[in-house]
Length: 182
Image (cartoon, rainbow, N blue to C red; front, side, top):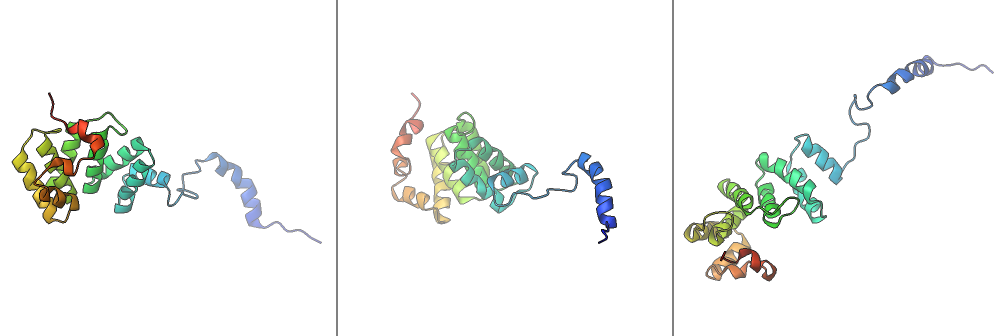
């Protein structure tokens, strides 16, 4: 019985040591992760924002990975995704992944509101009514809450129906945070 070596086998044996020394990523990802948080973070870091990538930030922050969520939401917010702006506000308002920063939180809410996001309008309305992170302006805050209520934000509708009683939308556990400065 005769054994034949194919030209391909010979070339692969001779050439493969040279390939082994090259960068294995030079031809792209060999077997990239799919449908994973790590994949979303990698894609977003590369500037690949999309509705699904940006929405994945919700799961990332709920899993306690606030620094990663902050990184993703910041990139998405820079690309104009208003939902990411409201999440950046939530992270800044509660000191998740960075120190608490009410001024930055209010600024994210303001940006989302200016772009027409109803949740951003509601949140910035609350910021204005409370004077948290921004100078207090109750009339302007109520006007934004009204706009959000007309857009269908149920918390805004509840707040308006309660004659703008902020306790209606503030969890008891957060009352200390919104108490007037003495």
